[in-house]
Image (cartoon, rainbow, N blue to C red):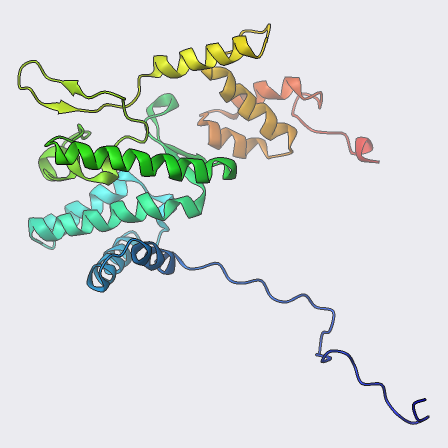
Length: 279
């Protein structure tokens, strides 16, 4: 038996706040993720240092905005500044472009965001990347990259670039960062020049696949690709997301357009649930 004046020894050290949970591991910084992505792909240390410097310059050029909040317009402004104001060589400008392409191709996945180009209303917008498809999408891109490498070896592997990019960056059309995520199965062939290439999958193929899935599921209601857009908005509102957030994700100019979706929620005209329903 213990002595009357003895003090039990605690089974674990008693800190100042014994019940406090351990601090969460801080999220890796952007440049750390960039370095990790470069090293995992066996890029040289010199390339790693160069790419990190270009990304830092890009961020500081735009007043420390995060790359996830920037897109093609900001990249073009930065590259134009390098050529016009800094008078860098074409090879230096290409290196800066390569660094930014690598950043957006291999580190955006961590941001779980998709940039929709020239969407509804001819505008760009950001939306979320589903966690459920991250791994399948990365595996898909590996396969697409192998196809691109084979095309390059055959003397092809170039895509049409938007606006004047092809003239400004003549080598960019063959770079992996500019290729389509979902390319056509077969290359097109120019009857005039004999040139070959791949465009993106035609939208009719996706539409046919959706129609076949609707029939297979035995659905009586008419459903198309556009139905997913309506379902996306409705489910977000059902999950309690703010209507302004949904408006931004859908690219609606006027919130009144987004308000149309509230009629299916049984929550009143403004999509508000009565506090009594939570009692």
